[in-house]
Each structure stands twice: as structure tokens, then as C-alpha cells.
Length: 325
Image (cartoon, rainbow, N blue to C red; front, side, top):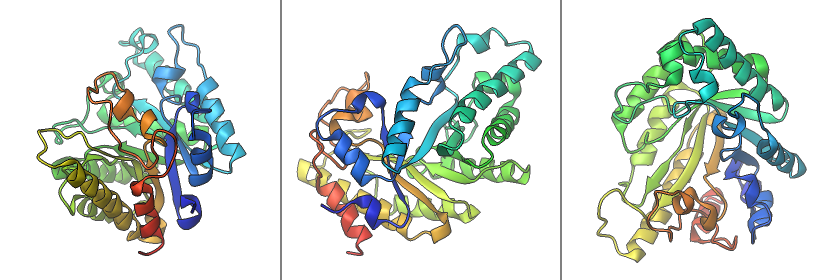
């Protein structure tokens, strides 16, 4: 069986959680097919920061060890996320100096722990609101300001690991052009302020109803800033926002088309902008589109490998593109 990591001139990534190790077919697919690994949630604040202010790193360390053992790059995900509101920080609201110091210490501790191990980091994750026009409000923006929390996060991450590449990561950039414009405007404004931003992450969580050409259009727009691009979290779900009129066969054909378009549009980027192409999970059985509490349909098949870690048509579609077919 061909190995994606051998076929691509850029990194081919996947997302893993350490308790997935040892599941049927998981380790073989994760170690042989991919050249870069993103930590699913074990490098997020929700996992690392404890209620008493202590930090835990067992999961992230296991993933880092897996990467080292299999000659894979590690992508850290994520230092600052709007959704987090830990009690240890909430207690500091109103004391900007103390909050700022704790904010910096947290980023320094996490990025510093994986210095020399993490090739790159998603520093501020999902900064644009769902309306696609405004920027997210969060505990971090309330305490440090909309621009302030962003700038400080990048400053501290760079100080903790000067060699790590720093990314801004966002979703729905393919399906919502107005959100994409807001995102690009934010990145451009931060670059003009001298903020170290080394690349753009476009998550690409999509479903089978996404019209043809939308991924290509988004990739072209995102490439306009000249930064490396990380197609950072792709999965193609059979679960659609509204009622889908597609048959199962039509959904499968659409899924293959979208994976092909995603890879073709990435391959078409200038070589210096091809950072990595990352699938959000190894086996269908482990996908967040199966395991999240809000998911009603537990039969989704959004990834490259089935429940036992065997390659599917989606896998062979990416092989075809990488082999020029």
C-alpha cells in the first residue's frame, strides 16, 4: 500500500488523541501514512490547566513521543481559544497586570515545554465570530483587549520557542466568503503591526453539500497574503446542515470530489506556501463527528480509514491526486 507521507512533497498530517493508541489498525495507519501530527485536545488549555493552577502534560507528552519515534513533525494545537474561561484566570479579572502576567506564564510554560519538539503552533484559534463580520469576544479580549490578547499571545509564543512557526487557525473559510474576508483583514492588520504570523490555518470541516469550486476559491484568496497555508483539519461529513436530497451514492461521490478538490487546490499553491495537509482524525470510529455528545448520527464516515484502520476510497483519491492522476 502506498504511503501518503512518501507521495507528497509537503507534510501530510492527522489529528490524534493519546488514548487512541492501541485501537484496531490505529497505530499502523497513524505512524506509516502521516508525516505530521496535531494533538487533538491534549495541548489545549482545557486539558492542561487544572483548577488549582497546576499544569498537566501527560497526553501531549505521549503524542510528542509518538512523533519522535516515527519521525513525524508535531503541530501544537492550540495555545489560546476563545471558548476557555478557566477559574484561575477569572479570579484575576480586574487586575490587568496580574492577568497579563498569568497569560504570558501559561503560554511560556506550554510552548516552552515543547520547544524543539513542536514544529509549529496554532496560537490564537478561531478569532472570527460566527457572524463572519466581528471578532470573537472572550475572557481574553475582555481582560487584554481584542488586539492586545492576540499580540501578546504571539509575542509570548515566539519568546518561548523562537524556532516554532506560528499560525492563526479558523473554520468555515470555504463556505462563508465574508468570514474569510474578515479573517484575512485581521491577519493583514496584525502583520502590519509587526506581529509574528508565519502561516494561516484553514480548518476545512465541510459536508457533502459544499458546492464545487468553493475550496479552490478559498485557497486562492488565502494565498493572496503570501503566507504558508495549513489545510489544518479536513474532514468531509455526510451530515449536512439542512435536509440533504442526495442519495448515499451521491453523498459518497460528493465526498470524493471534495477531497480531490481540496488536495488539488493545495497542490496548486506555490511550493513555499504548502505547509501541510492535515486530516482531522485517523479512523472513522475516532472522528469527533462520531464521538461528540451533540452528534445524533453515529454512523458518519468522514475520514480516510474505516473503523478498523483500513483505507477507503477517500484515501485512494488522495493517492491519485498526489500521483498526478
